[in-house]
Length: 131
Image 1 (tube, rainbow, N blue to C red):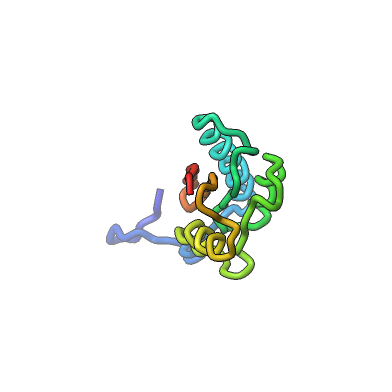
Image 2 (image 1 turned 90 degrees about the vertical axis):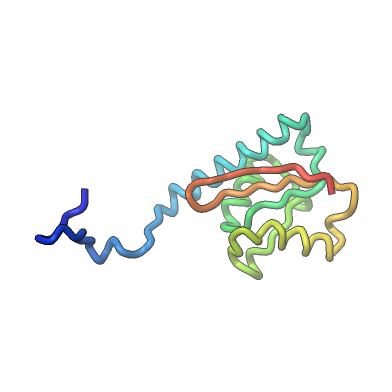
């Protein structure tokens, strides 16, 4: 319900004009959904964590990504981060990680790569890529 003036125009409290976020809720859901998405795509492909050579997580929150890594017991050397250098580049985070990993030699032809993202609107997804 939105209050209106005498002419029927909506009245919005100025405090409600800016974006709002419940950070704890977003964090909790991102960890849960990214973990589930990774497990789901691996199960569908008949893969285990050990079959994956490199994990590329959407770079929105380093702490959330580290939680996913710990929950799924993914070795540190199999995970690439760059949020410390670029922050959250939204849809470009995983492609940027790929380009950097390939350039540095961490991503090589023939590797199996797991990608996972959680984003705006509580959307998430994952993919396995044979590089």
